[in-house]
Amino acid sequence: MILAMILIFVLGYVFIALEHKVRIDKAAIALVMCGLLWTVYSLLAHDAHIDSEIIEHLGDTSEILFFLIGAMTIVDLIDSHGGFNVITDHITTRDKRKLLWLLSLITFFMSAALDNMTTTIIMVMLLRRLITDNRERWIFASVIVIAANSGGAWSPIGDVTTIMLWMRGNVTAWALVRNLFLPCLVSVVIPTALALRYIGKGSVMPAPQNAGSGLPPHVGPRLQKFMLVTGVLSLLFVPVFKTLTGLPPYMGMMVSLGIMWIGTEIIYDTRRCMEDSIQNRVSKVLKHIDMPTILFFLGILMAVAALESAGILATFAQTLDTRVHEAFTIAGVTGLLSSVVDNVPLVAACMGMYPIADAATIAASADPAYMQSFVQDGIFWHLLTFCAGVGGSLLIIGSAAGVVAMGLEKINFGWYLKHISLLALAGYAAGMLVIYLEHLIFL
Figure (spheres, rainbow, N blue to C red):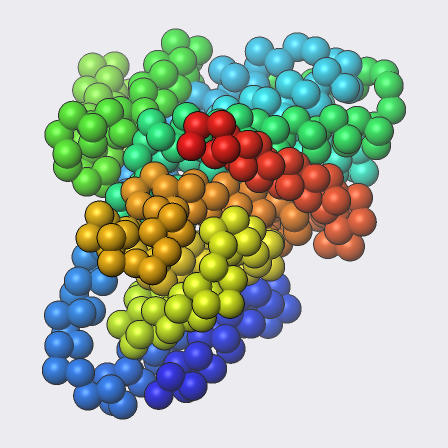
């Protein structure tokens, strides 16, 4: 049974990694893989409690899915009202090197509040208005990918993996920000500084057109600013809501989405702009949610859950404990793997392999100092968050942000590997070094 489940999982992973070659959506592969794994486990394990196990895992997975649906809807609502143009229209510098630094830092902070994929889309579309040379634009787009991945790693709502770890209680919001902000910033600053050698001195061409063109007549500057501020505050409200109420983050996201929904309905009904506002209402935006991505997360998380129920992850964790037995090495290797395969299942697998250690577990362990790494907000969970997020920048296919940039700008895999991967690796290693030094200082 174990061999069959591992084989199914590995084959599924291969097809997911080669999605652009086999031309089959990774969501479809993940769903089939999930179904096959649970089928094999049901038929061969003869577990009388399998129904309750599925329901328990589905409950945990649904929390993440509902959170993502709410976050994606709010981001799309801001975008459909041109809210992000408020940011892009204020970028006035034309110096190439200053522009690279500016876009890198804007992406870094923006992706902490939004998701890295949406941030990358926004910033790459901005590049098309500023940079005319395709190869030069590849440099800018690549730095944006690095900044988006690093920016999402230090925020509890910045990336799917941080959302997973935060919602499951492996990390807390303030501790995550406090411990990872500096390492993540270093992982952006170093690649950006090194990338300056690829771009010449001088100025870029002026923007050929207004970013706000194409918006419906009822969407003016005031409404754009209102939607941007309201949307960002709604996303930032979620960790505050969890802290104040103790309820799961997805509940706060549902509250935020509901408030924005009510607010936009009131605005449009007051203005009586019914026909041209239909496309901007939440009911319409919801129809444009990226459901294949949601279904991919459902399939991959439930597939990992099947491996966990079968005891495969626990066995693998025991092997790592015996052979490696070092939190930095385990997290570092996980980060390198995240440049090849999706970081969501990798983090899900680590969460399944290493439960949060409590006082009793530490006391009963033969190595209490090692087990201390796995407590809530332990060094391992912060390392895993950093490595899984930032490690995705090492290859262009290693993250959602990279895949989006690759698709929009037609960035060549080999070109990225030759020119950008070493830059990203330098930032990755430097960030891990900062985490190590922080651990020594504040231990």
